[in-house]
Amino acid sequence: MLEIFTYSIITGVILSFGFGTVFFSLIQTSIESGYKSGIKLAFGVFISDIILMLVAIFGTQFLPDQSSIYIVIRILCALIILALAYTHIFHKTKPTISLTDNIVNFFYLFSKGFVLNIINPVNFLAWVALVATLKSYHVNWNIQSYSLTIVLCTIFVSECAISIFSEKLGKLLNPNKLKILKTIIGIIFLLLAIKIFYSIFQDFYY
View 1 (tube, rainbow, N blue to C red):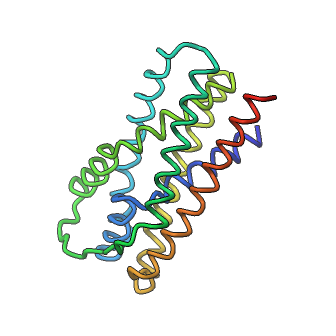
View 2 (view 1 turned 90 degrees about the vertical axis):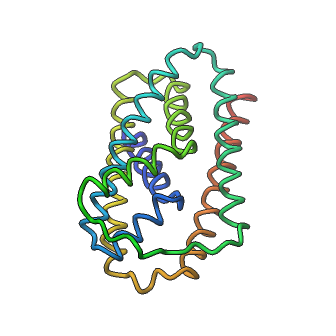
């Protein structure tokens, strides 16, 4: 159980640091309007993640219970992560932080977080891969729900922490430093993809 807990925490942290539109919008909102506004945006992300997770759960129920299917899914997942690693490490466009939003009411921020998160196809694929991976290990539904709940909560808590630290350290989060962080995350993605490929190799040959 401790292994599942640790795996879920790490997965949640990695997903929360995706460095996509949600991440930069979270920083932007927190710098401009304070961490409370960032948390409102994070709550919209949290609700959209619940929907994506439920769709992934019901969608994978229709997949045949064959290990080959899940090996293919894990390979696709690793390829997606490799693509993310490439864009994070080698993409030369500097991330920018726009400070032009003035509407800070809950509905606007909630809707912004919800929409930005749910329209990103990578988020849905990540939940599908996570659900499929749990199913491939043939763990019961209680353990699956336990793991997914921890991932969800970790994402929300991590994004709240990002909001708080963004407000306090806003002056340090300039585009150049964000580019360095983006490269570091790309390396983490690369290592994660290698780990997935290695686990597939072990399952296939041993």
